[in-house]
Length: 113
Length: 114
Image (cartoon, rainbow over all chains, first blue to last red; front, side, top):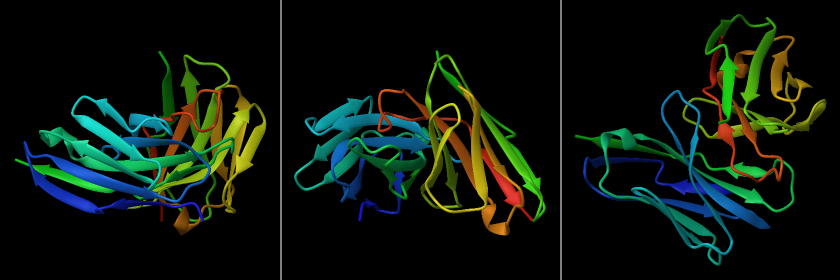
């Protein structure tokens, strides 16, 4: 069964601290993995996308890693800001399979001053 | 640049009433279009996707339906709403090179069925 599991479910950190969110998947065959940020009451916005051959990708203070062998990805946020408070969603897509993206339930991050 | 619009932004409807949510995309042609539902505190559930006008694929059985009357217009409908239809409905588009491409989401519609 194709699944995407994210951990932790929720996380509270202080402003300025770093944090790492985890994503484990069993989706096969693998096409790409994306991380989205979803502010409360808004649509998700893409942060990074990685294919099989990529093991790290950065977008400002966000750095995503991918280990295709262990089927794990992480999203590292450095020097967190209050505006980082949001839900972070991991999405894994299968090759050549129309509409088949599997979404994780997300990690809710709260950054406190 | 491409933009995606959804309306209405919020909607409160009684059980048994009909539903019509609209999504339009600007600045691109022949996009792949998607409808998702997100229950409170939960992940996104793909409801429908479309690769072209009149082409609709359903991911889950339900009392909802979708239509694509024009290239950049995607409509989500129901003849009779259920309480369980409450949620946050998101429309998304992606390029036509593949359905695993990055999806760009609209602002969403918050539906409450009473």
